[in-house]
Length: 281
Image (cartoon, rainbow, N blue to C red):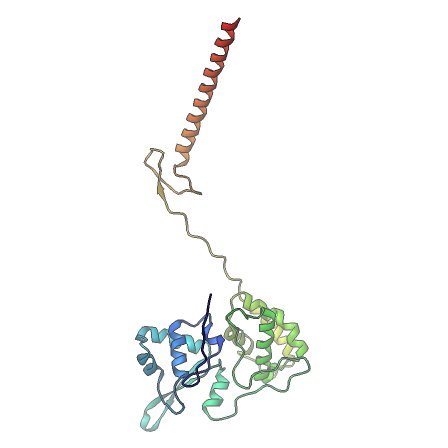
């Protein structure tokens, strides 16, 4: 594979490999996100208008928008306006944002940040949450789980975890990812319905990670082998186990006929040998 790349000097938008290689974003979703991120500062263009200009049809736009919302790249609010009219506010980000982080940016506040990490604890982004890489640099599940737990701990005051707690809980969170769970699903399982006071964040996190663990991904069942017509002469249809061309009955009859022919040939050969020996005596 040969590649020739010349870095542009103007009119370009820095895009992370996380977006380009994202496994759950369709090509339309990526195109819509990149189009929005490439707009000059101050340009107010809705997602639907960007989709129209990018040639994304209405149905595909709906799917793309839902994917971006699910992954945290797009947030949208319906807000009441003057005279009973409602308006839509949209936020597009080049990193996934939680609802709290998006609301803080929308309202002009400082986004939630993590408390200073304990020694050895991974640090967090000021805005956004870690997202798995989607190419050759994909980290192993425990490393990814450590980053996600650290971010949740930093953004949810009732789940403050020490670096030691995060490292101890990382294998459980990694098992979630190995079973196909997303970062959003893990976050929801750990933060939804929290009591006002959490006496032991580590114990509660461990309980939720264990009790709400998703089922393993089902093993895909291969489709049945197509039926085929028997080539043995019976005219029946059968489902082959491997690459056999005749049904079992025809194969059995042919094997019996071959065996009978072999026995008859052996008998004829023995008789010929006896005749030769008799003639020599």
